[in-house]
Structure formats: structure tokens, C-alpha cells
Amino acid sequence: MVDFTLWDILRNLLLAARWTLLLSLIAFVGGGVVGLALLVLRLAGRPGTGRIVGAYVQLFQGTPLLMQLFLLYFGLALAGLNTSAWLAAAVALTLYASAYLTEIWRGCVAAIPRGQWEASASLALSFGQQLRHVILPQALRIAVAPTVGFLVQVVKATALASVIGFVELTKAGGLIANVSYEPLLTYGCVALLYFAICFPISQLARLLERTLR
Amino acid sequence: MSFDFLSILAQWPLLLRGAAWTIGLTALATLFGATLAVAGAWARSQGPRPLGWLVGAYVELIRNTPFIVQLFFIFFGLPELGIRLSPGVASVCAMTINLGAYATEILRAGIEATPRGQIEAAQSLALSRTQIFLHVVLPPALKTVWPALVSQIVIVMLGSAVCSQISTEELSYATNLIQSRNFRAFEAYIVGTLGYLGLAILLRHLLNWAGPRFLFGR
Image (cartoon, rainbow over all chains, first blue to last red; front, side, top):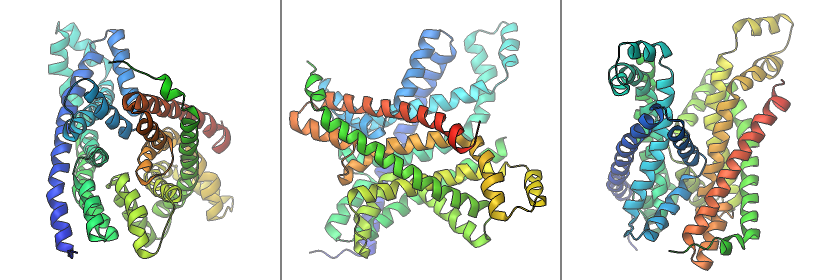
């Protein structure tokens, strides 16, 4: 049996934390792009599309992320794609993040006074111009703090990718706990590493909320 | 590609049992978690300073780590200290601790929104500190933050799907079991996911109805 020192455990966990960070980044950026597209679809004002986006948000916020991961993992395979845990996790987390981000940003846009839309419409700006030059710059200011706050949720959500066999921080913790017979220490370290990633982001979100209001 | 949902629905007793477990876990976690949150919010807003800091540290620690890690820590880690919990008990503990932290923060916001004058008025009526907290501060605070609290309870219910990973026999465990028996994975997870969606909608309606009726009047 190999003896595991605290440093061995930490070193291996730190290596695995790279994948947690990378997956978080992919999900956050991907979710941002999809979320923005959904937001524009919703704002464009056709009631049909708005309702569909609303249902999409409800679906992702009303079901467990774990089930979404399983569904995509097996669903992509059914669709004939060669599924890896990577692909399934990245797609599932992107969709999950997009649903939350589009809802957060919708709230921010709704906080912009109606008069801003009317004023820009009376200047004969098109819908695209209204969004680009009048509404989004103002909404962005309100949106920064909750968006950064949501990043914490994304980082924590990536922990579930361990369940479909993606080796990130949590999965690595499980593997190390099994070979080192030190589950308390290992999971303690895993928790502290997540805390080390998430706590600064939470604090940043709080700071931004205070300064940008 | 052909789908076969009937073979999943034929296993309805399993699904029903799983859903009952999910409801039971959520009910217990809500009960204990809400109690913990009331105590935590009291400590944070009116309790002794050091206790308030301690609660603050607990809240930050839980809010900045994933639920699944908290669950694994309790189920796989604690036995090393001689604390051996069954999957069900470990799940309720993890959910309680998780909900307790988020709800503490939510409730605290509500409590801090209580106008100072109300507390002074209560003091002038010679109510004790405990009476003031329970009868004057808490009910309007609960009323203010109820929507946020309901959302958080729903999130914890959905999060309980992870408890299948320590073999708690709730809804996602039942779904896993069914798909491992008949290899209809996609259909099984569709049915399981819709089950959760239904539970989430039901729970939201139930809490929105029950809160004003039993907790804070009107």
C-alpha cells in the first residue's frame, strides 16, 4: 500500500482543479453566449418565442442538474454522437447556465425604465440599435454583480460532472479517498479548494454590487 | 430510434416510492433547516458578537462549496471520526445544513428590514427579548422573504437528486435502478426529470399557499 501524505493529496487535487476551472469557464462563456441569444429572442417581442424561452428557463430551473446531465449523456448517444463525459458535461452545463443567465439578464433589462425604450424609439432607432446603444449599456451595469455571483453557482455545479465520470475536483477527491483511506482529510481538502475558488468570486460580486449601484 | 415509455411507467411502484423518499427528505430538511435558519438569523442579527461571526463563517463555508462535496464529507468522511450515518440520515443532515446556511442569509435580510420603531414599540409594551423576536420581528421578516425562501427550498429539493450517489433510495435512485434493469436510459431519465418538474411545481404552490396561512397571517 502506498502512503499518502497531505501534500500528495493536495497536489493531486490541485491538478484536478484545473479541469473544474476549465469546465466552469466553458459553461460560463457558452452559457453567456446562448443566454444572450435567448435574451434577444425574448426581447424581440414575438409572444410565441418569448413563451418558448420562458418554458426553457422553467424547464432548467425546475429540474435537477443531475438529471439534465444524465439526459444529455444518454441523449447525445441516442442522437448518434460519440459521447464523452467531457462533451455531455460541457453541453449540459452550458444549457443550464444559459437558462439562469438569460433569466438574470431579463430582470436587469426589465429594470430599465420603459421611457428609455420609448425615447430611443422616438429617435427612430431600430430594435437592434435600441438594444446596442441605449438599453444594454445601462442593463450591463446592473447585471455585472449578479452575473459574477452566478459564476459561483457554475463552479459548484461542475461538481456534478463527477457523477457521469468526468474527473474534476470532486471525482479526483473520490478516487484519492478510495486509495488513501483518508476520506475525511481528502473531502475536507476538496471542500477547502472549492472554497478557495468560490469565496473570492462571492466577495467580488458583493463588492461590485456595492460599487455599481 | 424508437422510444418505449410504457416499460418505464410499468415500474410505477418504484417511481412512486422514490418520489415519496424525495418528499420525505425535503420535508425533514425544510423543518430542521428552517429551525436552524431562525436560530442562525437571530445569532447573526441580535446574538452575541462571537456567535454571529461563527454563524457567518458557517454560512460562507456552505455557500461556497458544492452540495455533493458536503454530502460526501458527511457520508464518507465522518465515519473516520466514528460518526456512522445511514444514507437517509446523512442525506437529511446534508440537506439541513445546506438549507440552513442559505436560509439564514435570506432571513437575516428580512430581519434587518424590520423598522426600528416596531422593536421600540414592543419594548415599551414590556415584551421580553425572546417575545419581541418571535412575535414582532420574525413574522413580518418571514413574510418579506417568503418568495426567496420558497425558491431556496425548491432548489434543495432538486439538489436532493444527488443523494442517490450515496444510495439514498429517492427519485433519481429509482430512475437509475429502472434504467439498469431495462436499458431504456433516455426514457427513464425523461420520466424521472418530469417527475422532479412536477414535484417542484407542486412544492412551490404548496409553500406559497401554506406560508401566509400558517406562518405569518394574511
